[in-house]
Image (cartoon, rainbow, N blue to C red):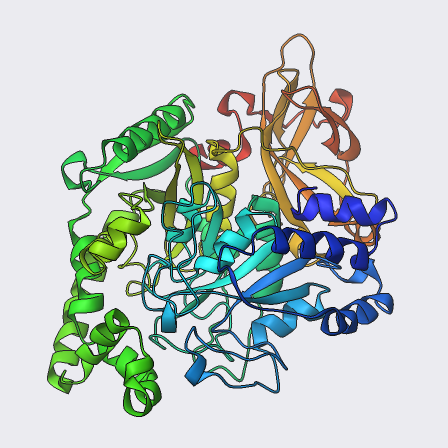
Length: 589
């Protein structure tokens, strides 16, 4: 059984129970006991408390009801030790981290705490006294860090999703190396209260998942403002900003100039990158635009050569002063490097970063998102052991700049090398573009090592609705779906038997989809999932001539969506079918 959120919901809809699902989870964990994925797994008696909570909770009111998840062991879970992969540092938190608690309140079940590069310092997954976490596809290779255990637990189907943290790339590099999606939110959107800091001003809590629907569902819960976190920021989500500034027509993706790409001698990874771009380019609605990566790379160099290292020194004062010999030697060497940095150096670097951000923002402004390799090479465990610093630095070439510049990032699976090793790309967007990146990833759908991603499966507790106009992601009426707990399942196209009209009138521009067997064309649309209890109130606000009907998609599926009879469309309506989708029409208007 796959543990993506759709299959978990199906399992429960067919009569399964959380206790039965947890028994499956325990078996899978036991089957991989030789891989040091977990630092602590909850005992049956501890899990029973969460099951009893679910016994008294309505699944219809809990978006993550019974969904198992893992927690990186630098994030607090009440009553379970937090070690940050340093046993001497261990403490017992009385309360869970804010993000963990909101997930539990939404019905998710914590399975345990996962291994990591000690004090979240590293991108490789080998810097832990509990052992180096092995790659989920090939045990001779690194898993990626620092969120190594969380990524591998998800990849091996032990949990539906897992929490990681990301300061330099730790929520993205392990995703690429284990065939996963890794969402790194914009700074402050997900609370870091109850998280052991690595670099407090840059830390993010991230989510790993095997599919976009699970990642989206988890992020929808995690994206909750924590007034007690001084670093928390409200997610403007730019429904307003994206409505005005979202590009329409061809999707414009920025790619790095070939001369600025780095694969560190790995021809297989370079070939996988070229193959991924070639697959993307088969979609004529996507345009690739070369961008200058130099200012991004220069910003990335500041993370470990600049004064931000001092934040790591500050965060690790206790272990450095009280038990330095218990800190991993490589980790100790890195975090001690910030001890002698001056305040003047700090300000100088901030000025430099401000100037670089202006240049990077100008590059991003040309496109809907930037698309880069997530990492330039996947090293073996033996290679990392022989060269622990330089190779780890190489792993951050495409990731280290992101939090310094306060961008959102989404690592996506992008196939495999000729050796069968996972390869991944990362979508990069400006602040609060998190959900836009999820939408773009659905559109790309460029494949993974495990081929054959399932289409979303129907669930009797939810209603799937096709929208093709102002209710689409980022457009003016989209909040009507989100405020009812709706989320985007996938970007789709109708069968070539429809016409799209722009209705006359003031206010928000509205479309009408009309069936036309003889003169129709394929129209771009989105499939959204709504809790069944919220559908009635939503439909009450839909004005004539629109009504609910059956729409056929290009793959033959029939879904419910807004559609109008040809005779009901006002004579003043404009046929905009030639644009292919509503956004392209809006861009032309």
